Picture: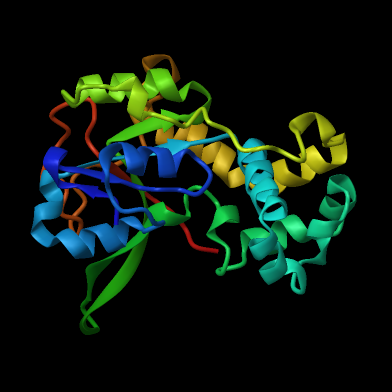
Length: 255
């Protein structure tokens, strides 16, 4: 897990959002772990840690993951039988319904929704006069203390480091070293763009309307009254926010 004990930080590593570069920067473990796993790992110490993540435009992120697969013979070989679409021209492949199949495939976290690792549930007691007290599950989306945007990552990361009194060293931050890309955004036709946007429409909504409440860049910060603080069951806070980077939760309805 990407726990940076020196700075009491949790890095929620979503695939294809410069996560490897950030983990290497702090010399922390790599891996895509949910906030529930972090909470369980740290226990009551979880309240002492702030959290951060990077979000990225879903079309760019999907294409980056797609290019990673087609560029790696080993990965392509492993996935080719289940997903022969990777051998096709990009627009032909995306017209086959492969986008939604990849997003929902538990085996390939590169294509999961960016909010997947933020989902958690909390047991809440409920009383009824006619029956014995019972416990129900309420689902929440966890909002990290800091949200950085991939398209402004250098500036956001510098700002984040400044807010946490961490010395920024540009020579260690290597996310701009990009691998060769077979397919580019300009290669996608309108139908392909619409397909990806439609499949990840909840990511767009949650990134821009919910996660942005804790955007590092103040120009991207939003207010959302649905974000709650101090929810019982998570070990992060027992009261109202005391600074601008308090983690939060938002109730969600599972379909």
